[in-house]
Amino acid sequence: MKRYGHWIGGEEHAPGSGEHIASTSPWTGSAVAEIAAGNRADVAAAVASASAAFAAWRALKPGARGRLMADIADGIRAERALLADLEGAEAGKPAAQSLREVDAAAAYFDFYAGLSNIPSGEVIDLGPGMHGYTTNEPYGVIGVITPWNAPLNQAARAVAPALLTGNVVVVKPSEFTSTTTLELARIATAAGLPDGVLNVVTGTGQEAGQPLVEHRDVRKVAFTGSLRAGREIGRVAADRVLPLTLELGGKSANIVFADADLPEAAAGAVRAFTANAGQVCSAGTRLLVADEIHDEFVDLLLERVKSVQPGESYGQMTTEDQFAKVQSYFEVAREDGATLAAGGAVTGEGWLVQPTVYTDVTNTMAIAREEIFGPVLAVLRFSTEDEAIAIANDSEFGLAAGIWTSDIARAHRVAARLEAGQVYVNEWLTGLVEGPFGGVKNSGYGREKGMEALRHYTQTKFVAVKL
Image (cartoon, rainbow, N blue to C red):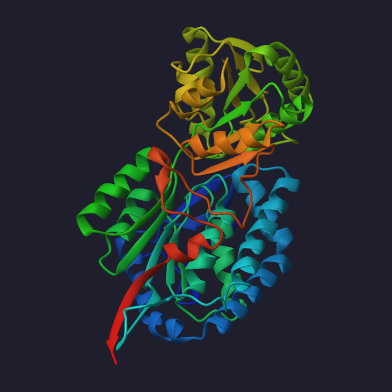
């Protein structure tokens, strides 16, 4: 079993406390690795290392930074097997899914490498005798705090655009799934990334995450995680007037109209709520079905659910607490009067949960309003387009939404009215690298992915010159 230190200044550093935390595999219950238990002093060392590297990194030509992003992507692919093994062991994912996660991480660096020479800024007409223009400048030290459900993927999607735009980064991954982020930093250094440009401090949110948000030299924080933790970070950031990108919870609605391709929609609906065992903030966990096709569609859905094999189609609940939380909603759903149509139990193998479907759900029930973060689907009915939109929007969250219809006019019309950061039509496409990703309402603000992320990792400066 490997013992990891922090990654600071291009090399491994022992924790100042001398203490380590064991990460446990959901598959076996045994330790996968030991990670450093970081504290305020460790965070300060990482931020100091990043600050020292900023001027030289910012001064590097964008094309040179882009070539390094491409080299990091190659390095990730070269160590695909190692990274997938660690991701699978720590996060409880099947081998095939873990390999896809690694490929996605490499894709982020490839994508942003390709954007390195795109012109930024604009010229502004101020009239005769004046010249106005804008520049997009890096913040400096970016703090990135990532969750346990997709550790390598989440780190890559924030680190790649932040580095490309000239920032330097300190990542604090979840203490449950830190090893792939540490290996990413090692791979980046081996690919030629200058020392101090990417640092990783591990440990708990209280001991390492909070000091990162509070550090006066951290100029922006990107956080992905729970609504509760996001609110805490928001309070700390407000005192510092610190800009944030927050990607928080979701309770995404998937709407199936009567004119949809029903077999396709059923397959998509199952993927939407079972991917990664439902441990996806954008999971389609509210399924809204038109009255006239409800019974037929539910039959198709349940038939598709039978083909889902926990442990193969998806993996474990990543943490024991999450395993317990998902089970608690089975009793909540029963008490609220929902009808159990499939699942509603664990498999008895580690922290695996059966794919679970409830029908006769109303939008006032807890399983339709609260983020469960497991493979649990609430099926609701609607009679009109307006009612479907009203039900979908009646949520504190607004991360994603799906529309299944053969009417292209309806697709655009409904998409325009849905309160969600991204809308998918006749597919559930939350894994895209190219499209901006983020939420509205309590699902957060700011955007990761796509070209939009470059804007969120830079500040605009306006310059006016008298000629």
